[in-house]
Image (cartoon, rainbow, N blue to C red; front, top):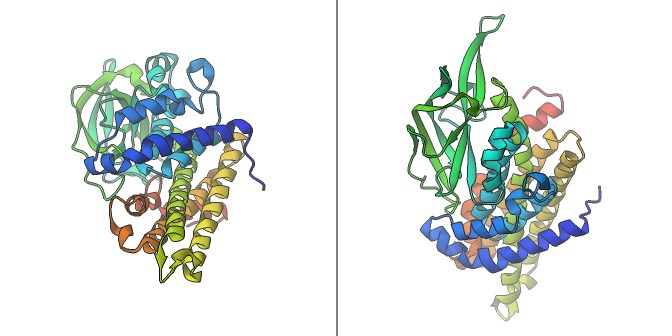
Length: 388
């Protein structure tokens, strides 16, 4: 396969790359140390149309495709993974469920601000006992007249506590049924909970190893009441609907990982050409040169993997296994390149002000978020006809 981008995609990629270099990169260290999402940068991303990229123009989007979104995510992740994941999650987990499953009224209420980047939305799936195993969901929602009453908790929810977060879509058990074998099947549904709803509490931000600028919180819902019409999509289809968004999200996550791997390569290559030891640039040493060559090979492979998965998605072909392959390859490339880049920098690679140090801290989550490495291996194995 030869992965080719059209002129519009190439132009978009360059525009976002320039924005990342001129606006995001100079501020990345400061916001990382402050552990604060820079809303002024998010606003500029909204003005560039990044949050509306893969959505039709008639609803306020940019009329592009999923490849374009991934290109933007990759370009941002070169310099700041936190900013990149804010876009990736804001679109894939925040906007997509409402665009795809929302009623006309829900779309008209929420989409204009979300597509323009004036607001962010989150998706509350993960719990202490539930994530990859959705059957462990304990959050419940019961109908009381014309309202849902929701009780439970969520954890590790991205974009859930910013000043511009307008809603969180949560998964909850809305009923149960008994299978012929006597086991109980939980009915999982998705429900929109607007920010500020009484009983909906956003806990303190997590003290994370990396992604310090990304907004991540635990959520508690105690007797939360929302209108019955806040049900998103069909009752009982909450997790099934989310699975499609999760598969798509893995492609964007792979693009993010590729951007991180690319950023590490660029920084290490620049330093290897500038750093002189014993009268020669360290890049002239075969070991360093070969390390950089392996870093380039990882970037190339990771990029081809997400290109392939994204093109399959755009053309309506099966992409589930390919998305997992891209996510697996990309996450491992980011981690390996961050390690190698830090080694090339030596002591300077251990300073937090160095971008490769931030990538070293940030990249570990790329092997965990959107499904762990082990989950990706399970999906790939199943595509081979193996019950793993």
